[in-house]
Length: 128
Image: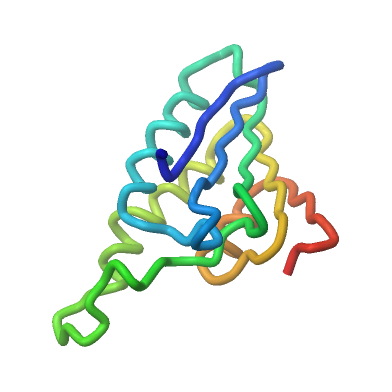
């Protein structure tokens, strides 16, 4: 199953972070899928708004550090942010269409920043 689901309906492009077993924590695969989704939102005139949410009981628990060797002395977490995450956030902020985050459960680290980059955050009572 893909780590990011994209659907459209009623003029809304919905992006669902889809790793519910890991509280939708970011992995490398997600960056390309998110770039494709935002490109679709930018280029498709029938899309009037973007909705960003998470599958399961959490919005996004941040970066999944289990895919990295944290003992590697050459590990550069900042490089990954600059190459993948920050450009996505910039494109999200620059999108000339309303961007809404539907936050359920945890939004931590990069997940909190992702929600805060949206124009509007709708938080469930379970949001933290």
